[in-house]
Length: 315
Image (cartoon, rainbow, N blue to C red):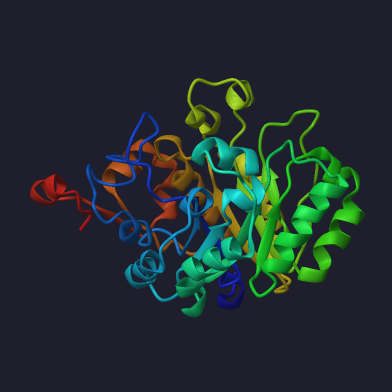
């Protein structure tokens, strides 16, 4: 894969901070009690999907700190606020009515603009639930969001099968804004979307895992994402990505959301290697011990001295 094509494909994870619970990355992908997680993450990947912007507006100072701590070529995919896409979830979480105002859109833009201004915005991700079916009122919601964010690159995640059953109409709806139609890998149900991986100017792939048993019935939300993809499961996607990337006509962003116990970064590294991206990641020895399959996908394996291990740093 030549250098030009390498720049078109980025692979990372959905979120970078999972400090608590059974699914933690603490002591696996990161040293125990690490204080500089994003900085450590950026030694392994050149992109990340930001989850926190889904739950709350971010302060521009936070965005500037993210820009400052990451390498110059690092890019953020920003998930848009749940108030725009999941009004019932927003009301349940905040107790406030989910009536969206122009000020809401302006405040969201203000928070993320330091990232866009520094050229580190990969795109915005507009994610809808698997119950968000294709109907006039939902099409209007989507159109409004696309209009509001017309100055940014955008990818849209649609999970309900009705969008793929009327695929041509969905593409027509997305086309004026140039939005990419995100491809998702998740447990298959009768109601969930059915699509092949097709070339687009902006290709956005999200891997949620295939834990069908726990997807809708679980005690904790993280149980849904407790899944580790095998090499064989990833290879068909890697092959297709290689084919599309070789044309040089698509920017391809790939994120793994199967975050439990560091499975997402492990699968992201496996995918990058299968695609043919050069091994540039720096990871700790504990991570390679947990996932031996990634050994050939990393450039540097760092052994943490005991004193530094206690401080929660990688190097």
